Image (cartoon, rainbow, N blue to C red; front, side, top):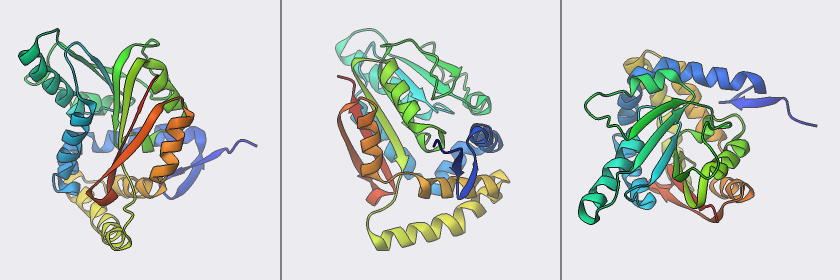
Amino acid sequence: MKKNTIDFGYQEIPVEEKKERVKNVFNSVAGKYDLMNDAMSFGVHRLWKNLTITKINPQPGEILIDVAGGTGDLARRFLKRAEAVRVRRGGSSATAHICDINDQMLLAGIDQIKDKDNLSRVCGDAQKLPFSDNYADALSIAFGIRNVTDRQAALKQFFRVLKPGGRMFVLEFSTPKDKNLRKIYDSYSFNFIPKIGNFLAGDADSYQYLVESIRKFPKQNEFSNMIVESGFSNVSYRDFSGGIATLYWGWKI
């Protein structure tokens, strides 16, 4: 029998409510999202994203879909790296599409100086991506997959929109494997992150949910198996900072 409830942090709620509740969380924090990322991770999230871009290896003329791309942090990195290659080797400019279910996050990321014609934004659901089959060369999602109601459905959408030979990258918080590091991380996460959220964004509850959602996310091997089940090949992952974050990848072959 199909389960009709789902986790929302440590709560169990009706499946049909999760999408709206997640949207409300990010509506609340959108204006301070990047600031909070810096505060919560002491800026280390920038290093994780740079390592992710290095693994993606953007090339001139490629098309990226950045799902749950919010303020555009990763998409801009992709375009900057692809442009550096284009200047050296020639070719056409790369293109990036930020796709996020939350309109407030998309609006918060608009920057008339940083944004170029090859960066677009579209409000869309990871489970029903508004792109045609075999469209993109690369797809990324950073710290967003754990908030998706049906992760398997989203992974199948990622597979669908990628070209044959296309590659997918998922950067997500995870669980440190070392017991001592896990204790320190848990203590910091539960005791300080909601307080930082209250101080900087005026919203402790949303950050309490975000901390809890990390603990409910599948462990590295389990999530890797989900990626394989969605059709991807050569699936692997790399832990960052002792497993506080993990980068997963797979190819559509």
